[in-house]
Image (cartoon, rainbow, N blue to C red; front, side, top):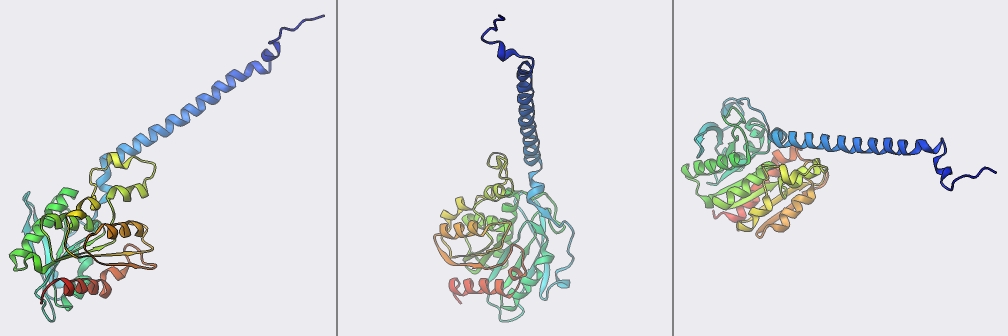
Length: 298
């Protein structure tokens, strides 16, 4: 009788192929993991090297003379601490001058031409408005960065003081990325009050919404950490956001409002997105006027 060794079944012709098959499967898994790692590294490196192209979307064209866009507008310039000469528009009141200035700190796209409508609304309520374009925007020299925008904002605030608008008669309005610029500016050059439209807790938190699979906290250079600046702010702050904002979640704006020690108003508009027209019209102007009336002596 033929005797079969106890382990012969494990080495039948069919089963002798299994170790090779397992090795092939393991190699395939390893190759897939390696591909994912390499792609993540490539994308991560690309984000690290070109991240500012993913943050700033300037319209670099010169929008032309202020008077062609807004009644009472004139072209002005001021110089930053690092020597850049920036163009801006100063819009004077068209009715009932309030002797109050509004420093408008824009978002990360377009140029001052796209803010002419809100400047006209505010001028009609009696406010002087400085429409700023950051470095690299609206025909201005330079390249945008977090520190660069901070220098631009400080130069703009200094310009308004030179025009006869001291801190206690100036309001800052920050929209989108400009909210981070506004809160940082307020820690060095405190205004009478601040309006934050669609503020975020930090740019890192916004980036995590867009790139949840990347270690953005490690590679992002321009962080705009709003929450870190809020403890130093003791002037009234209005926070506005839209429930349908897909760029800056309304929850982040609500968190900002909760961290403001001197909150004047928090308003969330149902169904409103990040760039809807309401942010550039009468509603927005009224929010600024309400804060002005509550904080600035007439």
